[in-house]
Image 1 (cartoon, rainbow, N blue to C red):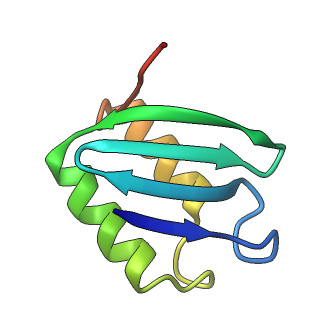
Image 2 (image 1 turned 180 degrees about the horizontal axis):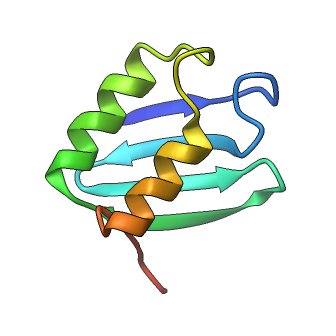
Length: 80
């Protein structure tokens, strides 16, 4: 399992992200108490693991990464 919490300075959109298998759990800064679970493609899992492991807020926008993955279908919400 991979877990990372972000300060508002690091990401104005994402509070925390965890990766377990092909599931990605995200809490947003706007509501840190609510978590969303997503099914992710293998390609996205590899990408997000690399970004989170070597995160640099001047090079990466977590909100943008998540938004692009959702738009492309690499990240799909699981409705429970």
